[in-house]
Image 1 (cartoon, rainbow, N blue to C red):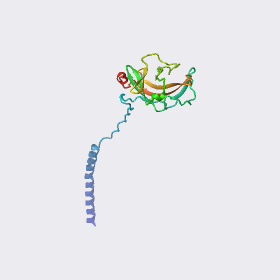
Image 2: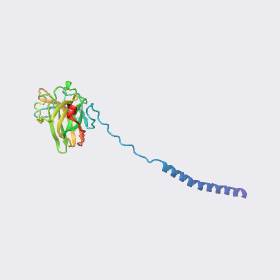
Image 3: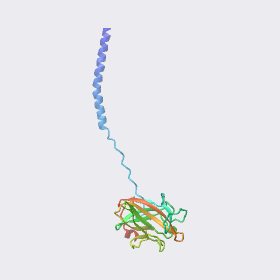
Image 4: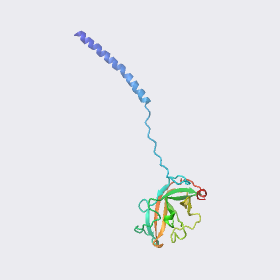
Length: 221
């Protein structure tokens, strides 16, 4: 009986010594594993893909689809310029079919109306402006054909402002300084009701004066 008790005490002592010896080893192994483990890193933020553009135009991320959103498809009457209930289907283009791509050239913003079928649209009165903290600024409209902006109150007389066709694309050289930040409005309008009203589509795009530069002479010839 005594011998068995003694033997049990010896065995218990050996087990305790073995456990104490194994603790530092386990701690060291955990430390090595912790040191070897790579630090957790956050995945990189996705960057916005630039809007695709036809050959000859650079890519731009400053763009807006015409006719998308409340009030971006409309009909207005001259005189009071009050909005009418919109039922006219004779728009310059189908909503969502044209996209305004924004650039800069010679110190002003330039907008290209990608996707516009000019043969189907007929004469147009495109126009553009920028909304800043001061309100709407540098508003202008100019005709694609003589008479297509007849009676329009913001018709420009500046010969450097207005539409031209470049690479089969309608391009409008605006009166908006290219270093101005704000919400850019790219608009296509056409006379309706025998010139008493117009129908239009517009788009919005945010810019901080960072639109890509284009060479109008090279693109438009």
